[in-house]
View (spheres, helix red, strand yellow):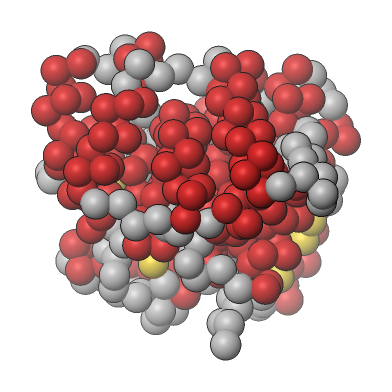
Length: 385
């Protein structure tokens, strides 16, 4: 039996932002608290959102200080702002960090329990305030997932928090909001989406529904990722990447991610590497490690991505997949941890703790090949340079 969870309302396509007031009205919501970041505030994109709401007679208050890694301190500051007025929903506007922050704020507005009590394997299924997700990157898929990530700065830990309480009620997926994004951000978020799709498809918790979404995501992302990085104004490629990110988010929300994500969170927490980039650093090596335990599944990824046809053997198809992931990193200038500038001594010192935190997150338990701590440590060492 499969349990499928989706946002109540999903509006997809160019210009979908204009439909936000109607979607709010369908859910009888009228007093939003908007959570976004300084870039979207200063670039005028927040004004665009506020204008859409204002034309419908909806007044919103904004918290614009989100950071790349939502921290306990930042969430508490945002909660104080939210409680200054009577809000009936929280809009996350931006990439994964503002949306993750909005999820945490919306849930904790109703359930102020200790943060450590929220992290996986706890299931935070009780509803908080309704969450409205409006992504401005084609990457995290957070608009359709029941996950959020919170950084506990006191313990240097990126906590995976899971539950239906974090699943948005409304998702507005408008590729026009991604136009003009820089190449580095486009590449990192695009590889993040591809990682979501691959891990959902090979996950031990995969099901027919998540498979369909994961394969659709790979078919959309694979031919368009290089294309959109080469030409940020390519409207057709932007649309495909945005839809692919949504499908990948739906896939992993209903099948879970695996070893790549388990290992990437500590890298982001300790060394402040953007989430998509840390996934990209790991994806080729983890795929090569994991593939022998699930050749048909990884071969299916290769075929969905157009790297092999139906008559090519699984072993050959998987070899093509590993080669493509390495080539993609090279062409999109994904640095190794060494090239990123991480101190080598700190990297080596943190490896045992990163391995422990990866396992504790639960994600590696979904991997086709279950990695021992020593094997995870070996992968961290292998990707260094």
